Structures are given as C-alpha cells and as structure tokens.
Image (cartoon, rainbow, N blue to C red; front, side):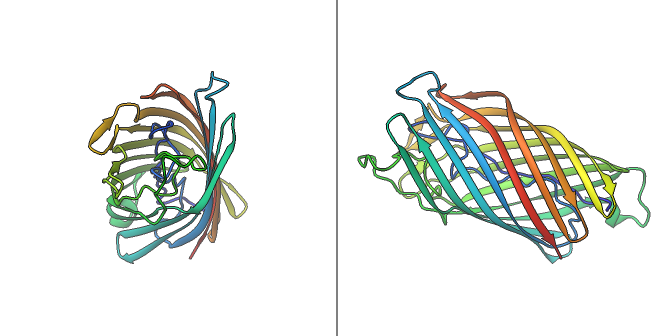
Amino acid sequence: MKLKYIFLSFFMAAFLDVNACDICGCANSGAYFGLLPQSHKSLIGVRYQRLNFVTHADSKVLRTQEHFNVGEVYGRFFPVKRVQVMAFVPYRVDRQVTSADTKKQNGLGDVTILANYNLLNTLMDKEESGAFTHTLMVGGGLKIPTGKFKFDENNTLQVANANFQLGTGSTDFIVNAFYTINKDQWGLATNVSRKFNTTNSQDYRFGNQLFGTVDLYRSFRIGTISVTPSVGVYGESSEHGVKNGDVLEETGGKLLNATAGLTFFSNKWTLGINGQKPLAQKSSSGHVIAKERVLVQVGFLF
C-alpha cells in the first residue's frame, strides 16, 4: 500500500519533581501519534504508552521512580472536505515508588480534541503527481479537564503534588502544523506544536510547552502488507509553572530524544510500535531524569 498522506504528530509533555512539573509524563502531557496511513480515511483505534522517570537518582533516601501507563481510545474523522478531526480519550494507571512506600492511582485522564485543515496536498490538488508529493496541515484544538486534579498536601496517603494527578484541572489550547514530503517509498515528516496552559481552580498553571519532531521513513511491501521503519528525533521544552501567582523556578525543562519505530499497514488496519531514548535533557530542578518511552497502537480504517 502506498503511503500517500503520512503525517506525524504528538503532544507529549513533561513531568514533575516533588513539587511541580519538569519534563513529564503527567496529566500535562499530550499524545504522540506515530505514523498514520491514508489520511483520507476515517480511523478508530487503541494504544498504550509507558513513560518512566527517576528523581534524586543518587540518593538512597530521596530516590523516586514514577511510572505512567496510559491506555487510550482515539479516532479520526472528516466532517467536511480537507478538515480532519481527531479525538483522544485516555485512561491512566500511574505508580510512584519511593524508599518508604508505593502510591498508585488510576482513572480517566484529560480528553483532547484536534482539528486540522489541509492547506497543501499535491496528490489532491493536481491531476498528476510529480516526483515529490507534499502535504501541509495546520490547526489546533483543546485539552478538556475530564481527569481529576485535586490533592491534599497534608494527606500522607496521597502524592501531594501537581504532577501525580489524572488531569490538569484546566482547559488548555493547542496549535500545530504538520509537513510531509514523499518520493517513491521514502518520506520525511516534520511537526511543530505549541500548548498554552490556563490556570485551574486550585490556582495552579502548568508551564506552556513547545514540541517538535523530524522523522525519516521508508516503506517496504510484503505481500498485501506495507512495513514502514522510521528513525528521527523528538524535542520538547516546558516553561516554568505558576502557583498562586508565584513562578515555580524548579519546574520546566528541555528534552531531546532519539526515536525509532516500525509500523505495519494494510487497507483495513495499522499496527505500530515506537520507542524513544533520551539524548540530552535538563530539568530546571536538576533532579529529574527522563527514561525510555514506548508506544504501541492498533487502528482500524473505514
């Protein structure tokens, strides 16, 4: 199957230290979609993401491991020509392990809805395609506070910080652009996304975030199946958070990951796995270390 409209997007975020978010997998994170085929077709699917972090790695007393597991139902639809709408409904199972105990939580996360307009598509706009094909999509969306954000700092049974919540408690705004160029079975996909966070009912605001990817891929046909390996880089930058009007200097950070993935396509379904490994990172607190990430997803086209 020829991959005509492959695009890559994500809204992955940052994670918190003991008091607030650095480079994260918390409720402030968004989503990494992987390669999606045939963007003229609707799609519904499920996926699983796992993100791991370590704080105070050199301390036997303060060392903390945080594991974020996110299962998600997602869909892609076309209400009108050139307009693509995507929706993501996550369910989270998170765990924090310290030298003293293990704390867990699970429940519905924050729902995200995105809409993009196809500004440029040489396969649609021209009767005959040239050596190269191009697509450019721009748009944005909302992250809706459907996940719980509420904690008691005096309750020792809870992880009393903004990081370890199912949601952010705020309605946040996303703008993005995707550009893809293809030649024969080769392709290059780029994405840039900006997330603007608002203040929630507990007077906490996560820092605004900027994300970007560049991925190179090549398709091979095996019978009726197309196999597409990809390699690239992913970067994110998170600004400082704000609580009760005060800037939290220990929050925010930067991260650069190497990415590699393998995706299988047919006319009816897609199956993919993607891994990320940090190349460079810096959290404002200096205590947070992002570890490897993994994404597995399956989708059905109709």
